[in-house]
Length: 584
Image (cartoon, rainbow, N blue to C red):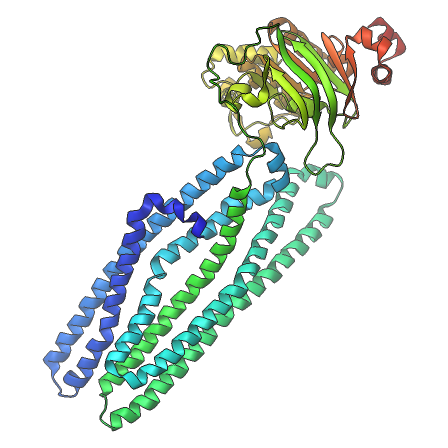
């Protein structure tokens, strides 16, 4: 938690005022037993009714002051805790967005969701209780012991024995609880992952009639979570009975030995009642402290998990030491080469073999580059190196003659329009989704992009046109419609480089052909990378790259590769007839 304390820096005033007013409340509370002692020893003993009313009014006055201080402390503590949670959530979201694909693949989506929601909520609740009770409860305990000494040194020995025992119990519960609460949060990760997979893959689950299996597995996981939570509850449950037992034994001792001292005339009856009240105050303070410890234990376990995310730094350091806005930056003065791979190799973290090995080629400005190969041959890996989603293990990727590692991410990706394999749309209107490519895109630019992407017709058929609402993930659209909108989103950006990563797989051949023709005729000057397993998609490309098991086994036009690349010829014959191949 101490590492996260910096998130209270903008709430220093609230973080001071909250505990301060709690201390004032505690001071008024510590005075109450002395007032009651005087009421008993003077008012009741002497049957002085006005004095009793006077002391009663004083008790009410202290009660009102205490309530006012408590409400003030609650307000400022809550404000500081909410601000803490908001800033922490914002920074974690920013940190996660700064991680490369490598780190995101390693950590996992479900655990990140748990940590930015449940874990931060636990930490926020812990901060709230810490600000309200961290000083108050110990102050009450220490203050009650000191006040007991002012009444009777001998009886105060009982306090000196009880308080360390109580502290030992609290420490033992906290030491045992932190690892268990951490296991609870880890198990929540798994529950969230299973829930997410089942909701997103509901159609697949039903298609294979696996509902019962999934329910059984989910039930087993939640039972494991229940078991760990029960263990955590049992550890926490030990605290109150033990503390109550110790305090009540101490109260019995105070009454026993106090009664003897009253008989001996060493202290008064009111002072014994005051000592019992102080012991009760200690009990109540420790009950509050117990709740604080439980919350702090959960918060501490969550803070460890939060700090684990912050400890993960991106292996991909952003370039941009040079000014990306200068005319010289990112310009290749030697020739018109737009993208060049120089002996590039790539490997995924934890993988035993390279995903790409020794790839070298160049793409000129305005060229269309087709990339084809079998499943797992490295097609997507290759195009993901251009916008630098992953870094190369060896070799260099150049864009406009400049190593991609020298660009800032904004400058590099500002040149590139990307259409990923999985069409991703966001909740909002069609217009809002298309403007992800360029925020200031006018409707004319959007319609132009929709026409090229072969999406204009179905958008115009919607009653609300560009204002048609899209549900989360585009679930209210067909697969082909989603793909065409993602292509339009990339085109609206007017990029210098357009990457289509198998992004027409859901389109029929006629629509795919019209799309390729429109891109070829209406996007002059754009360097296009077409990743596909369809020969028909890449055959008209200016240059075709053939990948096989991570190696570049052929480069050339369709006709050239039929004569020089057996892998490409085999792919063609698997999809086209001999007459179609020969006639191409």
